[in-house]
Image (cartoon, rainbow over all chains, first blue to last red; front, top):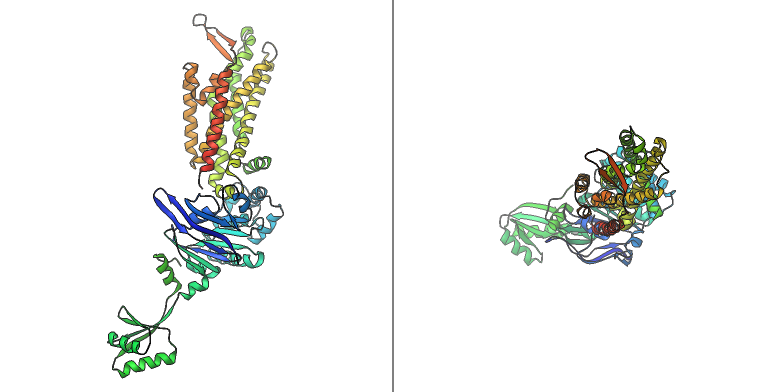
Length: 304
Length: 250
């Protein structure tokens, strides 16, 4: 599978601050790529650079197999739909009129408007002025604008901002369905791990402008390693007993951490500790959650 | 470009930008009715010149304000709806700048045209001596339009660059007052500011006799040098304004 977006050493400097540092993104074709990071990590800046709205200080960007430069930017972006930070709209015009403006500029047939309005479930409010829309409706109108013209790639920056729980669920379902139904690739940013976990197939985690993890969601889940914590009255002695039995364990915060052993093997280990006269006071199953991994990767508290 | 221009007109639907132009023409008509209320034979003989003297003076106060408001109305919709982020992914920033300028220019051109029409109709109804001086009126139309467009360019650039429209409107008002003030200075000083060009390119001069308290108007030679300077200034404004907007990161 080829990559729809590839960046190499992408950097952006504002004044003396490097906001995006050597980011090497690889967004696989047909995937929902979750771009995860805390607020101010550089997600929007990176996405804006991919769209050519912000000039990179260094590095290169390849979109749909073509290297992005000022000359070919618009021809490449014809295959891309975007919604950055907040929806763009003209409040004094109706939803339909807004879409007509975008479709004319994109060179898309007007009949497309009804389709995208249906897709984002705004078909009944198309004749209403956008200034009277709720934030969620404006967000859906923004998505409708992005969907005009069957783009191959969608770049959505925090598309669930301002939506109520039902709206978030609806948006998530829609984003998840796009690769299957229309063969689109979606790059979606969020600072909410749970959201990305529920809709992305690949993920990139950015922290203070640096990409600290990139891979499939499965790879991220694999990091959520399973351990068994054993607490005894003499951890040092227990450590030696278990090491002699070939169990790779370690002492962390007054607890012996054992790998995820099979029940029979674990029972054998505990029995040998009893036989050596080491009293066991606690045995716990420990699993590192995705939140813990996010915390480890980003060094910040996770938003749930 | 026709498509981009058509889109600009679609964007300002229900914004009633034409109202500003209509209000200007209405105020100028009221002014003319007041200024030309008691006309004797001598005044009627100089009626056309009087018009060509009064209107540029009025323009130096009103047109910059109109240009500032028109530019602001056209650009404010993009800031309010955060539309630049979307537009710049589907069209070139330079094209957007050009389309906005052409759209604003249509309104400024309409304002100048209507003014000339008001002058002709008013002069004919009032019975100004002789037929309308078409050559002078044409020059007036050309000069007024070019000064209007130069000021519109300046205002549009500010309106596009600054989200807060008070910046461009304040700059416009300061320019207007400075232009008016410069009319009391020699022509060379008047040429320094865009807003002074309504005065620089005036086609009619005035002599006021302190003793007899009689005003005489006379045609002056067309100031082509001033016009060329203005054209050069307009080109610089266009290139600089467009470049600043294109370079701006969203």
